[in-house]
Length: 226
Image 1 (cartoon, helix red, strand yellow):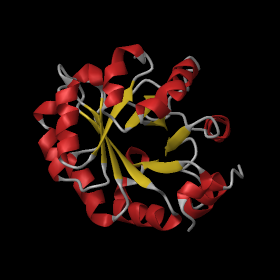
Image 2 (cartoon, helix red, strand yellow):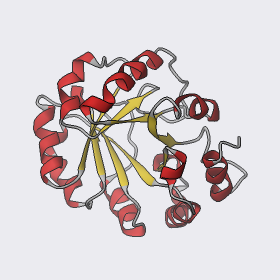
Image 3 (cartoon, rainbow, N blue to C red):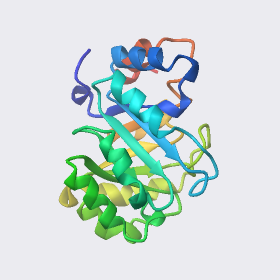
């Protein structure tokens, strides 16, 4: 399988959409198919009105693959439990937090940095770039939510496009990459990959629950054949 950098963008599998009756097989098939990383959504039922993956799910997937994990913490006050996630990960893995969920998000992000992991923030549709501007100086990744967080299969919110334009304008001199999460369709990859999106979280819109196997789907996305 060719290196994803050849294509200019990364593909991450949203594992909350996987078949949990066959999780080991799902990870192995996605790994073989050439997925770049595994996206792990952790929800506490408070910050978002849903529960998703658990710490044990994360540990299971971490044991099944050498590919990086992208851990998206949709939880209140992640600083209280961040060590549990740090201890379950390895260098090259990413932790995203939501700035609104923490009193002092820079403190939490510093713990991620000190552990040798990749620090990131996730920005909700209703969160402005200006409100997180200073944090952009210390993170490597910005995960832009193009739907309201908490559930798969939601509709794309068009006004997020203006936020992406703002991030594209400043990402190079502030040294962060922009990632897309939510309602990731073929049309949006075609539109936004050339503009500067570094990676896309793939869920039910393109990857999971399809008749084609993961290898054919991922190969088609790489070649923009969809």
